[in-house]
Length: 341
Image (cartoon, rainbow, N blue to C red; front, side, top):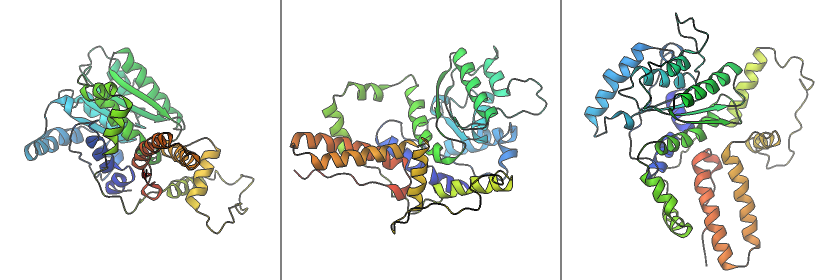
């Protein structure tokens, strides 16, 4: 999958515009790098770091009116990109002040490094480390491969021991963009909240519910809806099945070769069938949980005859719809409820 597909599937543009409009993060410029060889370019690559710090960033700073201080510069990545983000920040503490790592491959072995402790963790634990200013957000799935999950847990403990400002989250999923969409949203907010200036957060906390409702009521996401979501859950599951078949993992399953017991309804939707499967196995992204909450509240609204209670329900529903539409694929977007009384 190319960089443009990932930008679309992770809703990066929509996420940034939403958070900027909400004033949860300041206005910013996001730069995504299309790679030729991820394995080569993202594993402790000093040439990549030199490109970032000596070519790309100076070019951006010359072309756009942006802050140049490290606390305004965030480097982010998923999988090997998470490893590369930490490596770049630790090698250039005067440039990068924030790291966002999703399912980061921080267990990856560095050439000519013989220590059994992963290189990133060892750097953090080192008393000579000069990046204690670093703010980091780490998200990793409970279903990741064991070395990656263990390395991220250890890295978090090392960061905590050294008093780094760190947010760590584990989600009920694996190594794929299905989960990174939500964690990107959470990570950007978490990094902003860990900074020393938290005026916006304090402002929100000081508002009563009515003031917050008024503010939310006039907010809209300032981007066009995506017409195509190029990486669906079906694609994701299909890729897992194909990999398993190639490895022979399906050869001895009791259901191999038998037809699936699919819904016979004429309105059968394979995506919805897949979501139900995820729900039955208690593995759900946040937006699917929100979808059910919204549907339940809408049913409750139909039965409500009290105008004041109905107004409160509509406000609650619309706030959940706002969050749901940010996290879900475009095909699953929900409509806000209008207040007609």
